[in-house]
Structures are given as C-alpha cells and as structure tokens.
Image (cartoon, rainbow, N blue to C red):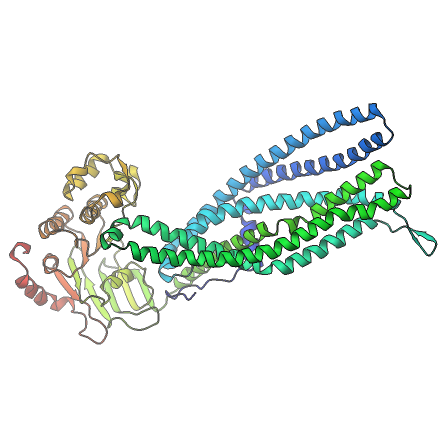
Length: 600
C-alpha cells in the first residue's frame, strides 16, 4: 500500500521484528514478575514431564504384574497411579492458572506499548489518512489478545513436548536393546532403533505437511484481514444509522456489505481447500503413526527378548514420542493462525517504529518548518500547501496575525482552507515554508466536533480530566454556550455523539472554549449548523470572556466573516494570491456592506 501522506512505509515483517515483539516484555519494567511467572510455569511443565515419565514406568510395572498374575502388585500399582493422577491434575491446573496470569500481564504491556505508539505524534491520524494498514484498532484489541494467549500456550507446550521426547527417548533407547534382527544367519541389534525410526518418520511427515500447508499461511492471513474489514463495515452502519436511514441507503449498504462478505466467502473457499489438503497429510501421518510402534516392538516380544511390560512400555513410549514429535503436524492449522496474527502485529509494530523514526528525523527540519514565535505573533512565511503527490495547492502564503486579534480565512471550496489549519496544527506535512506559532495553549475546533461517550462532563471537559474543572464551571460554560437544558445532566452516561444534534455538538465545542480558555483558537466552520443569532452570540461571548484570545476562523458565510477584524483569502494555485493583512480591511468593509444588518 502506498503511503499517501509521504510518511514511513510499511516494513515487511522479519525474524528480527518477531523477536523484538516476542522479547520486549521480558526486559520491561514488569520483568521481575514476568520471569517469576515464567520460571514457575517452566517448573510446573517440568513436573508434567516427570508425571509422564512416571506413567511410562508405571505402565511397565502394571503389565508385568498382569503378565505374572500378581494381584498384590496389581493393586499396589493402582494405588500408586491414583496418587500420581492427583499430582498430574494439580500440576496441569496450576500450569494453566499461572499461564493465564502471565498472559494478561504480557497483554497489558503489549497493549500499553502499541497504544502509546499509535497515539504518539498523532500516528493514529496519519495512518488513517494514509490508509497504510487495515484495522489498527482490531490489531490492538483482537490480534494482541490472540498473540499473547497462543504464543505462551504453544511455547509451554513445545517445552513440554521436548521434555517428553528427551525423557521417554532415554526409556525407548534402553528398551530398544531388546530388539534383534536376523541378517545372514546373524542376530543384529541396532542401538536405539525404535527411537531413530520414530524420529525419521515424524520428521519426514512434518516436512510433507509443511510443504502441503504453505499456502494455508497466506490464506489464513488474508482471511483475518477480510473478516476484520467486514466487521468494520458493519460497525460503520451502526455508527451512521441515522444518515443512512435519511438517505434511504439500505440498498447501497447491502451492496457494500455484500461485496465485503463476498471477499470473506471467496477466501474461505480457498481456506477450505488448503485446510483439506493439510488435514489429509496430517491424518495420514497420524493414522500410520499409530501402527508403527507395534511393527517396531512386537518382534522383540515374540522372540522372547521382552516381557509384556517391556512391550507395553515401548509401545506407549513410541506413541508418546510420536505425539510429541508430531505436535507441529497436529497443530499446523493453529500455528498458521498464530503466524498470520504475528505477521499482522509485526507489520503494525514496524509501521509505528518507522513513524517514530520519521518523526525524530523531521525534528531537524525539512521543507516545512514549524517553530515558536519570539513575539507571540502567528506568522507564515512563503507557506505553500501541496498534495501528497507534490502538486501545489496554493500560492505562497505569508501572513501575520497579532495576539488578541480575530481573523478569518476565506476562499472557494477546495482551495485548501481546512488544509491550511491542518498545516498550522502540524497534521499536514506536505508543505513548504515556515510557520511561527505563539507559545500559549491552542485549541482546534473542527466542523464536526468529537464528542466521546461516558458522562456529559467528560465529553465537555475533553481532552482534560474530570478533576480539572468543577461542576460549577461546567454549568456556567454550558449556559454561556446556550445549552441550559444540559446543566443538570453532567453526571449522566450516554452516547452523546448520537444524543446531541449537530448544532448542540457545535455549541458544546464552544463550551469547551469557555472552559479551557486557550490563548489561540482555530475554528473550522464551527458554526455551520447554528442559526445566525446564536452564531453571533457565541462569538461575542467568547470575545467578552477572553479579550486577549487570538481567533483564527475558516468560514464561507458573510455573517461569520463580519465577526472578525481581518480577512485572509486563500485562492487555488494560479489564482489571485492571498489577501495580505494590510489590504484586509477594504475586503472586510465590502463584506460588511453585503452582510445582513443583524450580523453587524
């Protein structure tokens, strides 16, 4: 995917990226708890391996007792295995418990790391504008959960299976000394024959399954992406239910959702075919592997070199080792899903790391320079806005806005007015020139304000915390913004983005200005949903409440333009240049003459 914002491209996941993702937690601030829980889990898994060895030894003793009809030994072995089973149950239970604790602590760390990277330097905004990566929210919410769970589960299981291979391999090696073959009239014994046969069989079967299952990894990855896209489209229908209903867009949404689901269904068909081929290989290896131990061991038994207990122990050890060696084969589909998840997370991690590096690199300067103003003036010097492809949007813009003034940026639709504000906010890197900003706090108010859910007070004081403002201050701000009906609802919980009309949302944005009292306010058509009287009242109350506030607005309507001291007109490249501050008063006078009397 191309980076339409001209920022860091997606890095292809590498083994180094996977190791960085896997190992970062173990050197984090939580490392002491991490290693303690990990060590406990390893000890418990070692206990599970010990139980497996004891079951193997018990199996030999039990069948030897049965073979010689020793009833006392038989009951003794049953009592032994009852205690051993209790220990195995406790070990497995506590293993899962400790693993789940470690899993959540690891996920907490992963979640904090990815959230910080996503929100740092406004990466969430730039990634969304660039369209570089699909569903970063679901990668954080779902992929991290699956990754932390399955990585630990499979990691501990691999450790256990390796322990089984080593311990029972020793048992099987010793038992294989009883296997003899006649070759040319001579009895031949191959050390560890049963062990070598099982290892070669499983390695050969694993290689076959890996070769058959390679396409499954890619199909799993695409399936996760298509499923996430489909869920995202469904959520958008829920979020935009009202405008869709007003447009009567059910048929269009049905077609769009149908297209998204068609991708899910189409890839699922390929997933079914790939899974079928993998399962054919897995089941073939698994079924033949159940017969192989008997082919290996029965020769020694029928020749009289082995007891019934020896035979049973060897067969069970062969089966346990085969299962341990075949773990990769038997869990290939699950491992394919973990690989796909790991790839999605590594892509996201690499993208965030690339953006962090790009942000650090940009501090040294570039085509666009943003720095603090020495005299609290807002200035642009030869500021030229360009598209991500490098095409100029505007002619060079040079303007000066003094503290406490009220300025409005005008121009035809699409000329770059909102983009001009984005550049001042540092959100549009595609520009040339210089921007000097006052050092005081600034607040940008878009045409469609963001209203989070939760309590009304939380929505009002955003992005501050609830303790930063008293209820009394909040009620006063609501009254000033012409929202008196909400003053008694500060503690109410509701999805306020849906509960408030567009006009009420814009008035809530003005209430935030009354509360936060910034030194500089950028208003991007923030009164477009308001009537003219309310519009004028809010601007005048804002000026009366904070006479030293510097206001920079973007507007089309003459009633809004008339409320400002200076007018700057931005024109598309090749048209008339920006009207400088010295010439703005003449344009302002003409606008005031054309505006209705009530706006002056």
